[in-house]
Amino acid sequence: MQTCVIKTRQTQPQKEMQTLPQKRDNVAGAFALNSDINGKQVLLVDDLFNSGATLEESTRLLRKHGAANVNVLTLTRTIHSDT
Image (cartoon, rainbow, N blue to C red):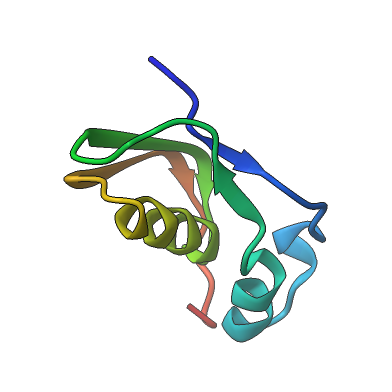
């Protein structure tokens, strides 16, 4: 297993954001790749699925850089009425 997505700047904790647009704005552009993933199958692992904003941003980045397929695995999920 290899870590290929890294955080490039500090963000506010997602749980402090009130709306989905705020959560998306909070993580927009906050990640980069540290390895070549072109044509590779990627398993994206996150400890918590809240709004999906972090996973969406990370998946967008992976697909932009040529990941053949991105599968997501989360360990827990919270339920909110704003998502």
